[in-house]
Length: 178
Image 1 (tube, rainbow, N blue to C red):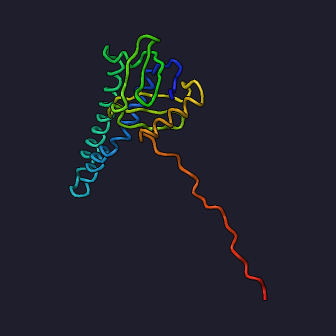
Image 2 (cartoon, rainbow, N blue to C red):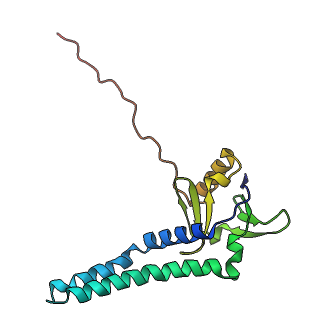
Image 3 (cartoon, rainbow, N blue to C red):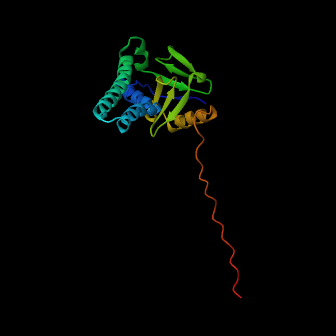
């Protein structure tokens, strides 16, 4: 079973947006630091504006740090390969990203840390900030998409489908009137 895609090129803006979303969702607890700083004025009188300023600046710097990281990666010469047009062949042994029929690279399944399914995409994470993005629209057919889902379930990277656990309604016996 092989799932094949059409040629696809990840847009740099999409990469930055998805990377930022993932980092902010993955490391949400970092925003607890500014919240903790804002609690200091409860114990120290007259420290509100200092704490507010520090909390605001640290939040802005944190978000800016990650935005610069993703924007920088998209500009690096070494990262050029991330933004080339590829078509993918995905099977139970590996993922092959091909530039053409003769050139490509192989990604083994043990490199995939997790898979995040979305409403209309799959993200394969190679590390906390490296990922492959597969929108559903790049698959050649619905069959290829189902094959991918089957492979992901067998690799235990995707939860099994939720079954409808409603039991069939059984009629309760009615006692005859006497």
